[in-house]
Image 1: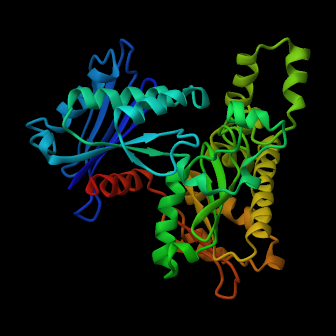
Image 2: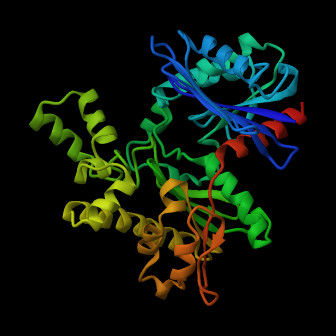
Length: 401
């Protein structure tokens, strides 16, 4: 049973073809880049036979991009399927579902209209998602499509955790509230914890640190999202690659007055010129650590600010949950950076957290428990797999049709 997983942006189409009945094997993967530009190309990896390709090809719209993608998968020489009949269904990552969607759904005209109505909540992301869905439906009208929302998992947050302390009319009229993101990743991690802990999801309390270029932390209570660091947009919360995370809102108005900045300019500063990049001029986590090791004091300070922010959220969520079965590190930085993991949970023995430093150093990039046997809270590294989670949810939805 092959599931085609699609993640569309305004000018990109990322894809994976996953055989969910054969140990969730990734058969092929790749991306169409610069869709809508003259220099568009497809990067393709036939995982089964090792064939890789980077080919310039015209893709003026997402429809042509999707046709290139499908034709590549069905190529007689280097393709992996003979026809569209070998694709059971298509799962699409959709960033924002607002309050309308608390789970994945089969795509219908009504669903498309609803997602379009939410574009104001995610103007940089939802339009690309919609273009991908519409392109696939036009090319393969008989193929079932499923929308999997990043925000859906967080719809279980209690009202006192998602409302902001501003005039209530801005929630009722403008839908301003905390939505949270990375939900698909958190759902995957929860399913892995269910197996690793030998507990049912509804019995699990966990704190999951999804640390990458974008980063967030989620408090999971009884198998459901209870609180999360990202808010109305992915800008709130942790120090990220180029995003500032938490800051006093008055900073925005002061910058606009002092620097005569437009709304677009200040949004660009907070989203694209802040975080690690803004603090030390180095956004990439690995490069920043290397700079720190070479004596760059600003890089050292930046990493301290970052890990301290992460630590504060972990501590706050322990207070919220009371009982914590696991603290999990995932995402590119969380999975692969033992120094970051150690700094986040260091000096927390009073909370029952005891890291095994040797296990931690040996466990980057693979599933492992990295806490001491005596630790009251288990510490884990679990590489995320959002594409597989999208594929599984797609099967669940389509099999019920």
